[in-house]
Image (cartoon, rainbow, N blue to C red; front, side):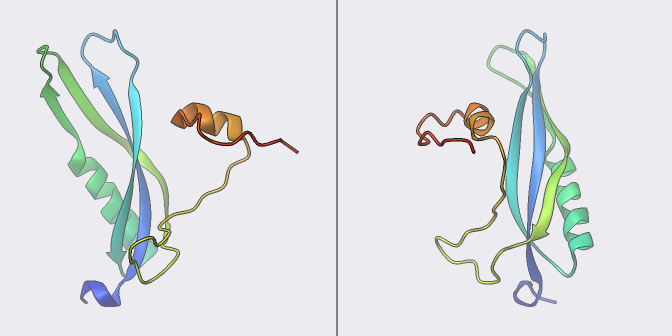
Length: 116
């Protein structure tokens, strides 16, 4: 099957970066990836393979070993829409704690919201 007949899925891959010497805290990141597959199981398998395939180690400008490792999948689900054009929402999630969200993503520009 070609990509046009398969279902679009969104996967959230989570990574950790370590720098040799442990003087800096590990940094975590997530990638939002679009996959076209025949089933959610196929999408999960492909996303895990991509995550493992993205792992890398290299030496930075100070000669320290930097390791970027795949931790796992935070989520895999159907894309919200089949047609993915400019400005199409790819992924949506909800959360209960806006303050924690702002801290995680350093989003000081978010409007203050009263908690109910």
